[in-house]
Image (tube, rainbow, N blue to C red; front, side, top):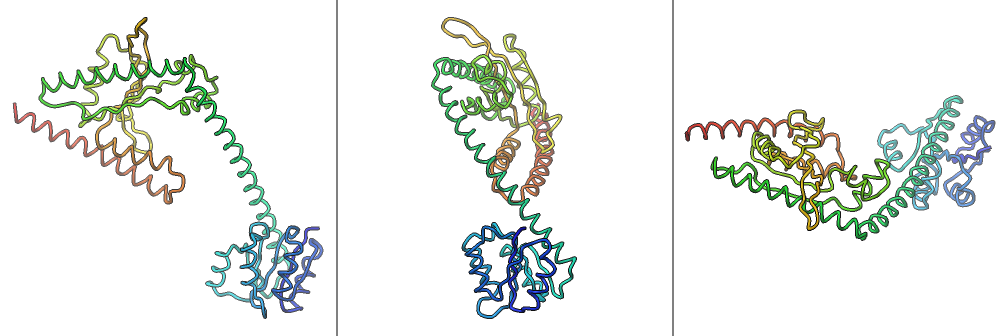
Length: 356
């Protein structure tokens, strides 16, 4: 039988609770806080629950709870307060200290037995869940260590280093072509279609994770085949129509092949994200050959790029509070940004028209 400890300075209350519970539990009793602490020191590991009175001479219930907190026993023993106290502030204080439930006097047999049983079952379920999460966390940490080690080994491989050089060359190829288009557009229309270009090579660890997540062996061929965003560029434009004009000019070049397009401007993501994504196959001219490499190009407006950086911080910051509220605010901001982008574009068109 599971063991419970009943602590109350009134003998009648102790005996009454023992009679109600002794068919289901081995009931230990203490008549004050000092006795309770001695029994807790003796067999706290074997207690299924503690029924504790608050008002007792010498050492009261709060002192017992304080000692249990200091010893870490509140994490392993559910505490039910047995009291005639009905003040809301007292109950709130007890719950803040980690108490599981209250049993108010006068005691009702069925209520006492149900509250004790439910509290023990819920507490056991919580502890089992916490242990399971802890084991899973340890497993994940080990997996993370393995991934980091293997990613480091991948990054030092000669074939991988050459592949990264080829992807870097592809980035420079696309960046050069975009800059040429920008210069030509500026000459013809007296303004630039984009404000800036940002580029990046995916880190070995990220490449490794992506292939593992897709259940592919980590090989050079699988990187080229199944990871489309190893080489990436982000093109920041002033207006939405500049995005489409620039993308169209880039795709008109006969040696650039469009592999995939995702238009999140016309069809935004549910969180409000808007951007034009193109996966391109781009020629790279190496000393001994010409080969095609995949490059992901993202086109965004200035405002949407700022929005995306905030959304990224929210996505990867685990300890942030009010996540749902912030997500709703970001969605509202994204909708406002879209309206503002098109209003600014309309104003630009009016200015351009007046100059003609």
